[in-house]
Amino acid sequence: MKDADFSLFLNDIAPDDADRALNIHQLLLDHHCELSLKAAANGQVASYKDASSGAVVANLVSRKTGPRVRIYADNAQSYLPQIEALPENLKKSIVKAPNCKQLADPPSCNAKCKKGYVFVLGGETYKKCRYNCFLLPLSAASLPYIKTLLTSELRARAIA
Image 1 (cartoon, rainbow, N blue to C red):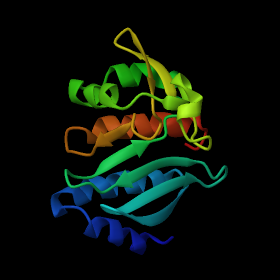
Image 2 (tube, one colour; image 1 turned 30 degrees about the vertical axis):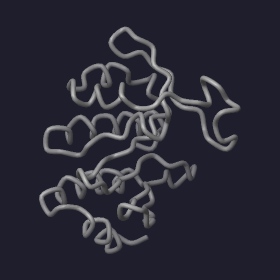
Image 3 (cartoon, rainbow, N blue to C red; image 1 turned 135 degrees about the vertical axis):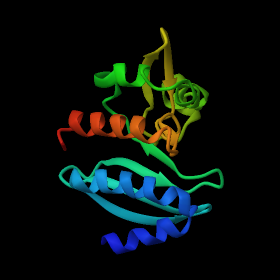
Image 4 (cartoon, one colour; image 1 turned 90 degrees about the vertical axis):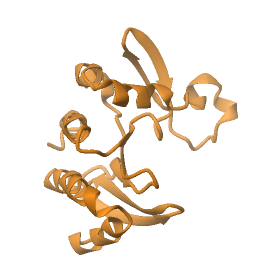
């Protein structure tokens, strides 16, 4: 999908959030991720796939409370120090995410659902859902941290 189509996503978010969304968008395009947009209940979802593997790296999601970035942190174990260094509000968002049903009780979850993440944060082990664990609010304060996590994930996937 061409860059011009990203305007559909930008139309769904507040003008104050557009520069931050464009910053994330450009970071992912610079790392050879392919963009696709899908309509969702709350607006457009911009999805970025690794061009070589086809695996989704991240989504930009429009929410009433503002845009969010969903990082598919498949390699989170390789950058736990960056996760530990997150500000408390972002750590709280991660800790509040639902637990992974696939890890806890596989029959209670959709068989097609991929398993979530197991990681240690603040000395405690978490087993979180991959779709909500790293769904972080995109704000001026969170932007540098989100970019660090995304860059770390891209490097771990050898996309960088």
